[in-house]
Length: 255
Ligand SMILES: Nc1ncnc2c1ncn2[C@@H]1O[C@H](COP(=O)(O)OP(=O)(O)OP(=O)(O)O)[C@@H](O)[C@H]1O
View 1 (cartoon, rainbow, N blue to C red):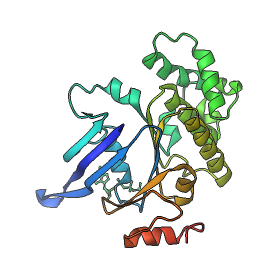
View 2 (cartoon, rainbow, N blue to C red; view 1 turned 30 degrees about the vertical axis):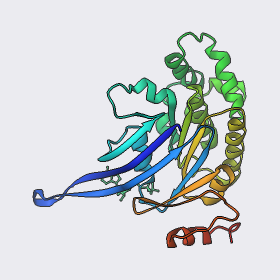
View 3 (cartoon, rainbow, N blue to C red; view 1 turned 120 degrees about the horizontal axis):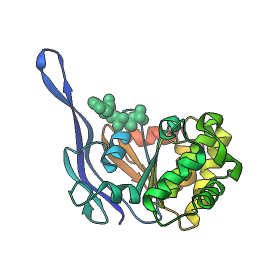
């Protein structure tokens, strides 16, 4: 087991007028696990708590109760340093612009994680080229600044930057949602190819069931903060929750 969530709840405190305090339960009692080499989808309607759950896994939000374990060790324990967290888990967000420094060339963007996580590696340039090849870009892109890249190219660079760390898990939070369909397809192909090369496990958060089916071995369905169902057999699995049935009814290839 790589990552394991045990009864995780996340409540956001809300400050109302006249000092009244209330809270919003964004994630409710979620238990969930990802093993090595697996690709897991997390789908659900807007506001169901998917991003909050991902933030809890990256310690970007503090959980209210429960446990988040990495190989059995709580990521919230003092002994679990940032370096260990980011060495093992990387996240690729929807908004690639926020992840790529506008004043850094792609070469520097890729060299930074290599320098941080592999200080003995001196061939940053060669490593950068290898990473670009993995995501389907050639060496000339090392010279580009982010604003010289298309949306799809930026996302590929973000994926390359995550891969530079050689993490065991990558969380994709709506990472390809803003791309056109051909770009989405080619990135999915790239992700599948990388995983076959003994690549990382994936947690793929999305609204899009079709791409989830393309990439993921199983899919967890979130509804109002809870994981209401996990489907492991895309062809013959039985859905029991009304929301999952509704969601899958919208999918052409599922009937
Ligand atoms: N910082 C915050 N403070 C208060 N409430 C929040 C905060 N962040 C998220 N929420 C609430 O928590 C709930 C879950 O939000 P979250 O962003 O995790 O959902 P999501 O499933 O990722 O949605 P989407 O698919 O639209 O990104 C929502 O009701 C949202 O309004």
